[in-house]
Image 1 (cartoon, rainbow over the protein chains, first blue to last red):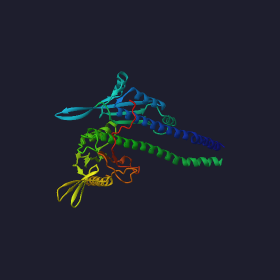
Image 2: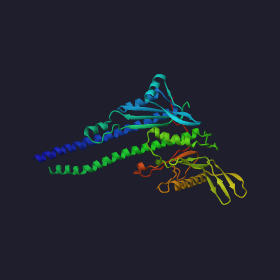
Image 3: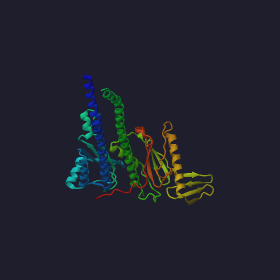
Image 4: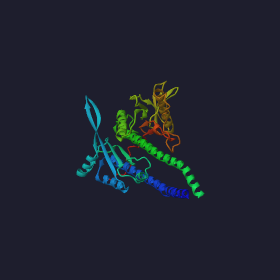
Length: 165
Length: 240
């Protein structure tokens, strides 16, 4: 009699897992993938726009933020501008790069308007999620799937094609 | 009760297979993301190198007309590797066995591991009585051994493509024999989709060959990257 009850309880638990938990995990995973693709597309578009126009302005940053907010997660955005410089060493011209990073770029846009880049510089944007995705949270509750700090980590950028230089 | 019991046992037996398939799918997803990251990084770096080639070359504005185009090899190579470095892409020089410059009248090969640029291999076909010099234009120069004179002739696009491809493949094979004979590496040229197996070289450019050993679990992958013409075109609508 007790054995029958235990089998029934076990059957119910198994049924709940298979009917509710598994589809939810899959659906959250799918949602995470969609968000990942969305952020990747947006990051690529953002960096491309900057590299093709040679400037970062408020409108571009706002557009990026809007898309990121719409995904329902919080993110850390890093901007990196590597300015091309030349040094002369015993008659030889050497190329080196000066890095300007997120805080200075944001500050410049806030106080002085568009931040300009030169043709031949490098520009990169890095985006990583700081809040957990639904999939991460659910897996965390269940205690399954090795936890990654950032499910979403996107790097996009390259050479600046148009600018003052 | 027996039904419930046997159903549960059946499900429990199936569970490991189900788990295995889920884990494999997840692993595959992350590997695919990694592959996309590698592809995108090298793609972007190749385009950056192509941009440097077109921007910093002398008379490079319209390469079809620029017969005496001077490609700044070192600048192009530096831009390629800088682009990867700033992106945070971890690589070693062994990952890039060859960078080839497709020029107007020949091909120059760069060996990243030896930091060595080859002499230019011209697009030539040696016949018994003359030698044909092909270029990316629709004109060839024929040098006669007997008379020592040059003659300009026009040539069809198909013939030009096949001769240039042949010259490039010969140069690549020679490079393979010289530097990578022991390794099982082949420097094959890309086949463009939608144009049967015809290769179309109609502009100067840079071809970066890389070793895709990181994701060889996938089949049908290319082991090269090519920057085709038209990279200077700004096709992104920009709201300034």
